[in-house]
Amino acid sequence: MQEGALWQAVLGEIELSVSRGNFVTWFKNTQLVRYKDEVLVIGVPNIFVKNQLERKFNDLVMEVLAKNGTKPQRIDYKIHTGIPSTQSVHDESVVLLDPRPGQANQQTLRPRPASTGVTHAYRQGLNERYTFENFVVGAGNELAYAACQAIVQNPGKKYNPLFIYGGVGIGKTHLIQAVGSAILANKPNARIVYASTERFVQEFVDAVRFKRNTTNFAAFYRGADVLIVDDVQFLAGKERVQEEFFHTFNALHQANKQIIMSSDKRPEDIPTLEDRLRSRFHQGMTIDMQNPDFETRVAILQSKASSQEVELPQPVAELLANRVQSNIRELEGALNQVLAYCEMRSVSPTIEIVSALFEGNKNRPKHFNARHIIERTAKHFHLSMEEILGPKRDKDIVVPRQIAMYMLRSELHLSFPKIAHELGRKDHTTAIHSVDKIEKELSFDGPIRQNVNELKERLYA
Ligand code: ADP
Ligand code: MG
Image (cartoon, rainbow, N blue to C red):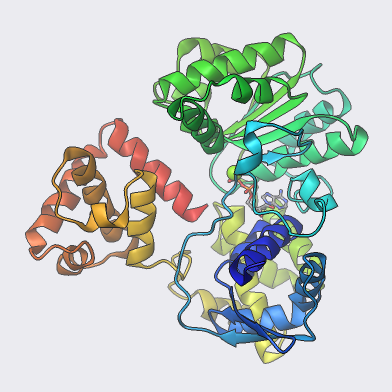
């Protein structure tokens, strides 16, 4: 197997066995540099990652490598500055719990481990770390948790569909994935499909575009016993997909199959959602999932720390829970930063360390740079980097280009000359004009606002 493919396969599997926060923090920007004389060299972006991989994750990496038929004598983690800040190929996508042969979806699965057959973790598809056991219940999420538990007891009977909505990073994906895993644990033969809405859309578009009929696609989703669709707000503005989704929904619902959806908005606030879908979404149970309160955030921190076998003094947990209020994903990232810092220096976490680390911190992941944002914007609009950076002035390129400039301003606070430069423009007044224009557009609830919101959300997801 090619070395690149080997490492992709290894990462694909590791992603399923560690939490998303850990994966993003420690594994995302790594690559296989070489494998020679039984020494495998992994390039890592910085000393923190090197240290953490050596101390905490080396066994796991060895184990997964072995499953993929590679057994080096040792692994060297080397700081490797040439690592591009590419977006991960491991975005949340369709996870097929019970893959049936001959389905159109097979090709869209994550990279497969190369070993014979598929590993248990892979076959299950869901991230095993997203369980009910490690989900901390408290004010804000208890209702959603209870409904999910009830569904596990009686899929398709109660709360069908279940529609959970709430802000970014508060545990929606964790919870609905946990339902999938728990039902599967009770009924190993259940056909459970977990799909991000983006994936559902992409597969539908592909099925139509390549003039293949959409029968396979439809049969696949309609054959599910439990259909879990994440982030249905992304159905907004996509008429034909909504129609397809409507039929899928009806087929499953009539057959008493369980449907679970998550969204960042209530059904009535998803723009351009067909009325008939909106009313379907409300047919069962709609739950507003709130940001966990302070006590719950503290408990989550304690639980994450203890799963890493670290003792977190209560005042430190409280300080962190106060610092990061809106989003558990960021809370987890902050905790990881603290733990890595302390481990490097062999000290215990203290209030002073946390205060120093987060002085002036704006909760922004450090790896963001201009290139990364431009790439993500281009990808969002299905443009190549050449197109977005090039001279063409077609409307469907100009607007994404303007959005990219706006993003550089709003997310990185770059100067206008710098923004112009990043987009290959000589004149900085273009940047001023573009940012201005997008800012004005954002005051209307139109496609530009929707796109910018989606883009930001994915950037921080
Ligand atoms: P969302 O889908 O709402 O954007 P996620 O489900 O991806 O959020 O959650 C973000 C991170 O926070 C995940 O790593 C998840 O495990 C963690 N998390 C969120 N809520 C809880 C909770 N109540 N207990 C433990 N971990 C949580
Ligand atoms: Mg999510």
